Length: 68
Image 1 (cartoon, rainbow, N blue to C red):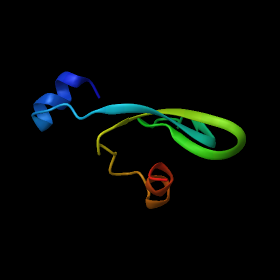
Image 2: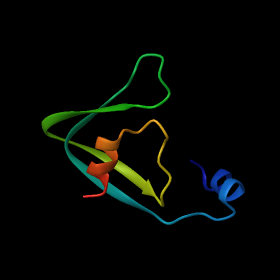
Image 3: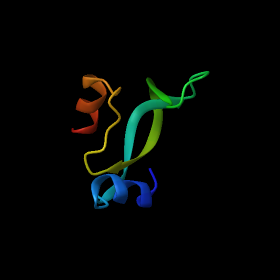
Image 4: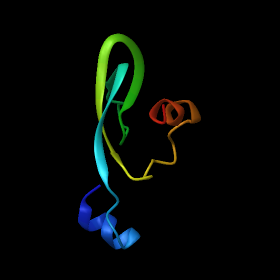
């Protein structure tokens, strides 16, 4: 999300940092807005983690992976 949008919504811009999700691959979903990630050995997905902003459709399992 753009910093200007986040600032309007939260009245602040939370810190962000890059992260690497090992053994996963990012895929586009036809007609979807957000990509999917699937477990794939020897691949990785680069993410930008911004504060505690997670999309509400992220599953518990995915959130658990990010918190390790």
